[in-house]
Image 1 (cartoon, rainbow, N blue to C red):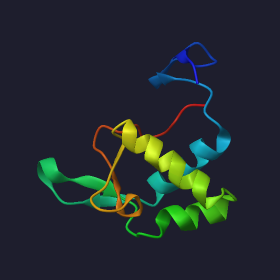
Image 2: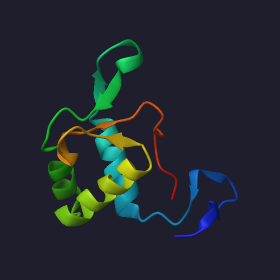
Image 3: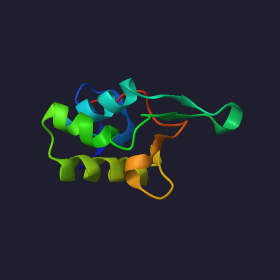
Length: 101
């Protein structure tokens, strides 16, 4: 992936461009099923199930290995955090609401 601007000339949320449709769809699906857990400075958005990634990937036709690779990538960008397992994670407060293509 190349650093720079999105295809329409507007900057992307993190400076990266050329996201594949499956990444955009999985991010949107997990965001849509997320709800707020905790309160105050400790509030986070969680999909609510350790099976959420697997279920949404299957629904969207994304191979499970690819889905977990994407979530791991989001973790590296501090959009997704987790305790013991990637599948039991949550969206960080500073993560974008949606991804641009």
